[in-house]
Length: 231
Ligand code: 5GP
Image (cartoon, rainbow, N blue to C red):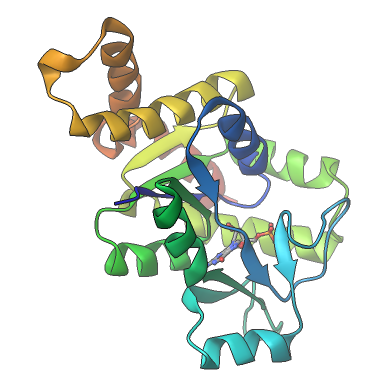
């Protein structure tokens, strides 16, 4: 059985960089390329970061039950959101190859996957604080002022859901965070082994992963939550 890893983070937290670094370090891991109705940003290519489809195509896929989960993201009473969805076929393909699967999806998607696949391992990546997130969103220069405002607002709401995740990773230094992410992924794979079978290196990475478990991370999260609340 494949292990399903769910990675969520507020937009601009550096998640894509961490996930890219992870894939350089870990084998037998597939990335689930989501479908979305939002237009491509920057250098994004169809079939690489996402499959970019029209609303009509997306709705036809919903009707054909092709999604394991899907959600409307960044919408509110005034603005229509964009659809994002995880295709079932990625899980089947990973299983056939004997690989694990990583989903980069939002908080709504994560809870839907957890319902369907209770053994899925969920990881929440956090920015060090609101200022840092705002800076990163502006610095990448991809979004309009209104979109940035909406993303910051969504970030606040998403961060409030951190306690639904198994692991919390605060992205302060990219290299360190990428290593932690790798250790979480590998530590979960090691659960199949008995303690006596573990090498020293394996024990070390289990310890690093343990430090990111939700129960241990709460203290780190509080000041980050506060930086989003009091504005
Ligand atoms: P972005 O537009 O910045 O690429 O992504 C916006 C949000 O949509 C991110 O939080 C991302 O994780 C989420 N997302 C991407 N693909 C999916 C998906 O297939 N399902 C769900 N529920 N969310 C997704």
